[in-house]
Length: 377
Ligand SMILES: *Cc1c(COP(=O)(O)O)cnc(C)c1O
Image (cartoon, rainbow, N blue to C red):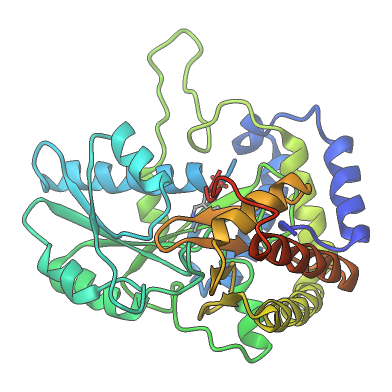
């Protein structure tokens, strides 16, 4: 159930990827036919994020690289401004993706994770209280992975403005879903460049952009910020080495495939895929809640956070894995996370619910006992 479009779009992505798999995206800054494609993809992405004429974007290999790009730029700006001391600090809600911890480790930043509010969203007051003269950035998720809940980007924006901090929004899972979910009437709070303090956004094309992996974007409020992103050395025999980001060689297939998928779908196509996904999501929510032993917690979008009522949800997860389902989980509290996608058919939903029903019966009768299994990645 993970980030697949319908069959026809999967086939298109595969075919275009294969067609261009020998092309090297390293040259996209210099080779016009590649640059044009990349610029068109970025423009489509920015148009979904309320980007202005001065906004910019970079295609990356995934959410982690998009997050590293933002953290690196945050550090570069902090250095330029002489702020944050030896190890500038980034403040994030506890639920922010572990890629922020990895990135801060790589870039000698200190990541301070602040406990969540009772509603499992960012505790904005506590985050503001933690701001010190070492702090250079705040992070919010739109939504976070463990619970599918949006942090209040508007309130985090006020904090960023009051303390002159860089606000990065991690919309890796939601970025290419929220615009369409909102158009379909779901209650999606402001999260993108609409919020004036947002400087950068990470959003994965290889999740609900329905593009083949590896494909993600980091989007910048203004082209000015690119100076903190690019590193174009000249100190070797080959002259200026101009790459778009962390990667050197990049598979051109992923870039062309992203263009093809986005062009083919257009706004209407994504809307239709989202309509399908939202309907299956509701069937799954209703079906799981009807089992009586599991419950879907409050969530704004995806993934669905599924909790045990009178069974150990970790044991249900372990048993589902034995039956071939790949289940991602959260430990605090114990949850299974279901990112329903547009390729989720009635049959898949029924099979999953049937497996859950059987497992719950076997757990209760004592036929199944064993180790809980709830991890992400
Ligand atoms: C998936 C995800 C990431 C990381 O993306 P990768 O493509 O796996 O590197 C970061 N943040 C959130 C909220 C995600 O869902």
